[in-house]
Image (tube, rainbow over all chains, first blue to last red; front, side):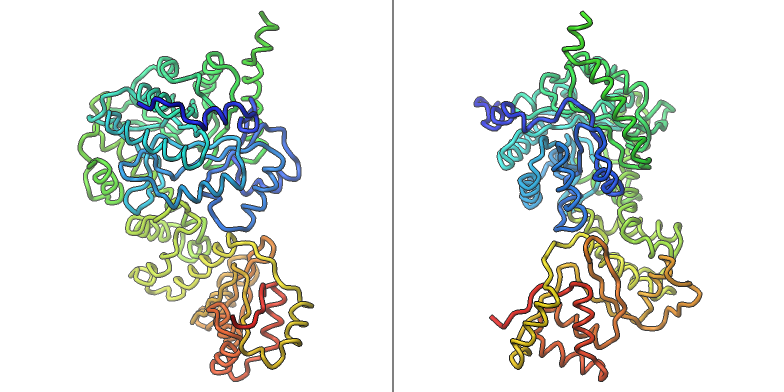
Length: 301
Length: 255
């Protein structure tokens, strides 16, 4: 266990510049760049996948620079492979550091998953067993990321389809322990909770309550696809390709009632609809956030 | 730890069984659930290739392209998480892919599309103005053959035995595909102007000239090479073309 509190925690927590607003945000997609710059939609923030911007120049950097001037930004990594049993890719981490220095995002997050193996990038968020050995590996990697980037990172709870015989810790305890040991925050993906709990036959509400909710720095909402496993039981896929399901909205409302309003991203990476459809979903999340705001609650009391 | 070795191997080899040590709450066969990961990996990589190679896909049709992309993805997964660079090896793969042997121009069309993506994401650099270039050329005069012409980081030349520019343009609605003879050799300059990636067809002399500049040859060597390639090489015309695309970013004496 780490006994000294890492220095970046105090620095980030005390500065409002390093916090996303208690509003909804959208993932930034290149077909929407011009529309966003032209119409400046009412949104709390934008989020980008770090790896899409690890290119030298061109339209991506031009528009991200302009949009960063207009909105708070979350940079969300999908390729660091924090759950890898091998050392982190130092070159990738160096590039991330450069990207974060350039854009000064209010939030940086990554996944509790692995995606690279040896020199191959597998482009999916792959599952891992939860035990003492893997816990140590993840904590070491989170420590390394936070000390190199000199900031607190958020770690996202995963959506998984299988479990490991080698696991001897519940996922929620595993995440609790990472947050406690490393001082990182939690990116609470409500869709992932719902998907994983259906897939592994757990109660999403109990799962939610077992997470370190006081350390949530951002929420993700997304849509899932539905299939069946070999026994005919439902198997949900974290597809990011459809509107958010009602069950996920309900779980989101419950999460907000427990932790208060937190910056919330509508994730949509496939079958991307017109911008205004996404904006309407974001504004639906804003309504939930308003209902969860402490001042409104006090007024109602 | 062994599980990631076995997991990664099975992801990339559909013939392998699902890795050991996976469990499900209801005792159902984990292979069905493992297949979700297999599918995610392959489909997401195919999607990355589809977005880089739309004309290549259109030339062979969706079913052919997906089968080829799947085989390529399993044999050559990306080496970095930056997928903008993924597919650099696809043209070489196409050349060795027997079902594509009858479409001799396919690999070069893929090369053209790869260079377009490279140009789209290449670094920003300030280009020299025409006035600055003209003034420098006059000042340097007889010392010019030793000088180096720096080109924009997005610039690339593709020399092909096939009509790659016409084929690509036919798929943008710029010309009728029926009027294109794919077996006529064509060369192209691929370069970004502002945020738009542009394509200019080059005669053989100009293509040889710009390619030499991109290899950091000095002006004299590039001109000599161009004349050896094509007797009718026209230097003023080649320089005018580079200036029209804001391609020249530096003009310097040797170090």
